[in-house]
Every structure is written in C-alpha cells, then in structure tokens.
Image (tube, rainbow, N blue to C red; front, side, top):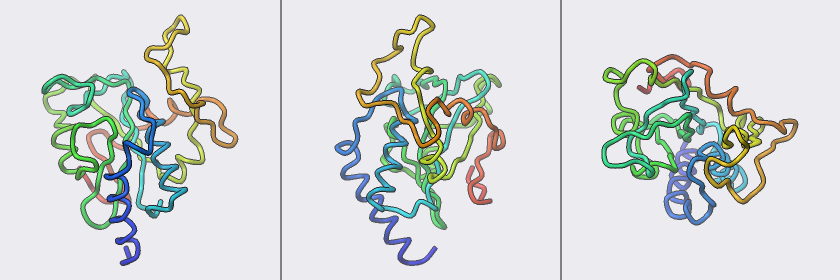
Length: 199
C-alpha cells in the first residue's frame, strides 16, 4: 500500500469516528442495510480506497450465530442473530472492523473484535458455529438488494419497524440478494482476506 492510500485510510477512520452516527439513519436488525449505506457514503465521498474494504456476512445453515458486545445484548450474554453484517478494512497493518451494532470501539481492531465479539467456537455447540462470506465492497455496492422479506413474520407483519427509506435496490437486482450471500462458506472458523490469515 502506498503512502497516499495510508493517508486516505487514516482520514476515513477519523471521518467515520466523528460523523457516522450523525450521517446515517441506523436501524437495529438491519445490519446489511446499515453497512450498505456506510459503503455508499465511502464511495460517494471518496473517503477510502474501496480496494481495502470488505463486507463480511456472518451466518450459518441454522441461521443462529452468537455475537457478544452487541448493543441489543444484556451483560456478557451473546445476541443470537440469524445473520450479521460488518465492514472490514484490510491493509498491510492491523485490520479494522466497523460494526455499527457493537459496543466495542468504532472501529476496533480485528484482533479485539475476534476475541470479544466473535470469541472462540470451542465452547459453542456446532449448530451455532459461524461461517463467513467475504465480499469486496465494490461488488456489494453493485449487487446487493433487499426487499426486506426476511424482516417479516409469516403473517406479513414486521418483526421490527423497518427503516423509513425505500428498500435498497441496485441496478438489475430488485429482489433480495441477502440469503444467497450469507450461507456460502469461506472456511469454518477462519476468515481469509487477500490470502492473509486473520483469525
């Protein structure tokens, strides 16, 4: 990574730390839309090179993944999500995680996030083991869409109030692309980004 990229990434971190909660209308239980809006902001404002940013989908076949240090959590108990989406900044130094639902610092190091939010799977039953899908930000911005059907109960009512803005629809993708992303295994218990072992 060249010096200009390093300076841009430092500026990116400062902008997001200072303005993120003011810039976005964030909704609990909409991590994929919150991350999409964050990525769209980065693209429009050019606050960071997209080549260093990756969207991470966390889920599994049973759609029960525990995460700790979540705003909707209670004490040291995990929140069980059907899926969760975070943003990863990967460069040649320490990787950073941007989790808009976390009580950890924003951003925090991947090492800290893995230790405190993901934690070891050695004490977790197999049906709760997490799988990760790593998607480059530019691909996510071009291909993600959500009709929010996953946010509805079987009777059509909302599980939680939806965001007030229209569902995200990218060119050529008018229906939900979320489920196709969440269950593809990169490799259980391990996240690889750019051929660098992170966890």
